[in-house]
Length: 79
Image (cartoon, rainbow, N blue to C red; front, top):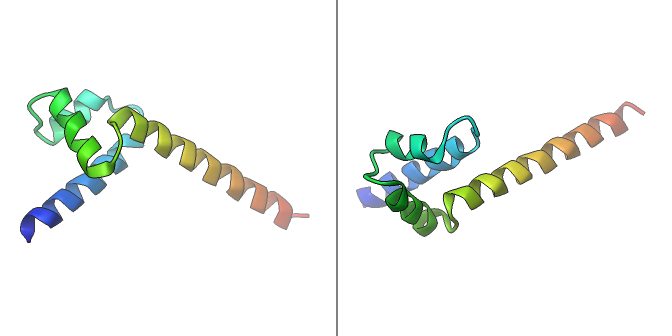
């Protein structure tokens, strides 16, 4: 059904925006038209499985590890 796809794409967009630490959670919430930050937090927790701040931390840690692994690979290839 349409609701599934709307939720899926909104969740994907939110998770992408959470990567950008220049955007506050309030800004992201406003971009999607949530009436309050607490409603946005509940939506994210329900659909992504964690609070927005936890998701942001997880995403940044994951990207950092991936970056370090890529740097390590480039270094080892150069040897």
